Length: 172
Length: 283
Ligand SMILES: Cc1cc2nc3c(=O)[nH]c(=O)nc-3n(C[C@H](O)[C@H](O)[C@H](O)COP(=O)(O)OP(=O)(O)OC[C@H]3O[C@@H](n4cnc5c(N)ncnc54)[C@H](O)[C@@H]3O)c2cc1C
Ligand code: FES
Ligand code: FES
Image 1 (cartoon, chains in turn red, blue):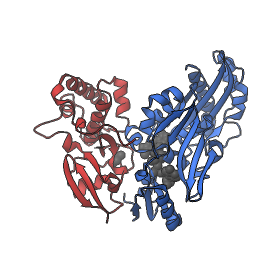
Image 2: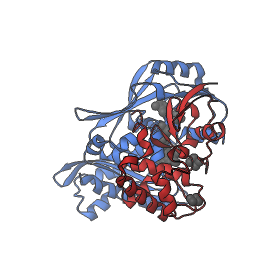
Image 3: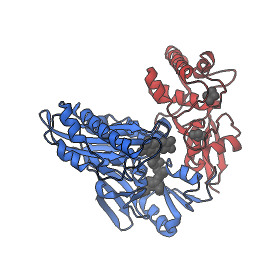
Image 4: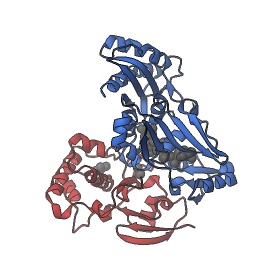
């Protein structure tokens, strides 16, 4: 079995993986990080979104072996219950969730969007979360939450974004 | 959904990849961004026994513009194309297609080479490559060959690539007067109609047009009769423009599905081709 080296939320792991193991299953079943959800399992809903070397990816559409040598951030690495990331606070305050199933992926995508574009228009927010489906909210409060988090992050020099811990962009 | 078992290799050179392909024959498959192949493997519509990941081979990524020619490595991600200022300037048609393809997460993984090699009838880039009259560079054990985009695409999920070859890149002449306009399927986001147009202008009239269409037939095609009819047309003359774009899908076996029947799709093909012509004149 190939052995992979992977950083997840800042912690280094050296794990043997079967090549067909999907990244989402490594995270959920082996590393017990169950914040990353499986929604559709067909690359459509974005519930499984994580940051791979700083970029949003659907972890159900990637094998864990492909992440060898990479740094992954899951929702658990974005913030903690007693220290929420401004994006998480904004989703809470602006009622950006109902059942919460889509929320981890939504938040990861929104964090990725703000890293590329710190002051997005509503249309840009909609395009930024195009890869994430929500069955509950009708999206309006999600847009509000992202807008409000963007304003909070712009005003908070000290705590920009967890994504800044990671290199921006992939290898090309 | 769990794919069937396979072995995984990540060669660090093309030669190593060719050796693996030769050794494993039809049981092997190349892996690029995985955003067509992995969903297929999860559905067990593809069951390769050996997966050869191209991600470890240097020299397959990047965009270069030299002497009016744009070259793009096969492993360049959609997101890189979608963010490229150079492409926006030299080939807006490709820049726009990259931005219209999939969603941010798909663009962060999928590659131009994988999209073209896959031969999906709804591949956005296929129309773009035809309109750009692009050349594909294909490498194999015996050396490298070049092929025109127009002969590369053969049918649904069918190209002239042999199982032992690797698409290494595409190149084309810069085309600043160009545009891609897409009518996306409301759920999948793939094009019901995708129209790519490259123009040469003589004042405010079109001197030459190349028109590529995707999503409509079983593979992308050039709308030859429209190209001829567009010569001499002033795009500001809407009647002349729409007249020239009529029948853009004539002679094509137009695909039909619940979201768009063949008649509707043909009609929308004319509309999107004329919109793409207008968009291409703005630059
Ligand atoms: C949710 C979703 C939405 C999408 N929406 C769109 C869309 O709107 N428009 C669109 O055009 N596409 C869309 N796609 C497809 C996407 O563009 C894929 O990235 C692309 O089709 C395949 O590229 P890849 O790099 O992921 O290749 P892979 O999936 O890794 O490979 C695809 C096939 O090509 C072969 N291959 C890959 N690279 C090479 C190479 N260099 N040489 C030879 N063979 C090679 C592989 O063996 C495989 O058979 C979507 C995909 C998803 C999951
Ligand atoms: S579970 Fe990965 S996209 Fe839906
Ligand atoms: S809050 Fe229920 S799916 Fe989005």
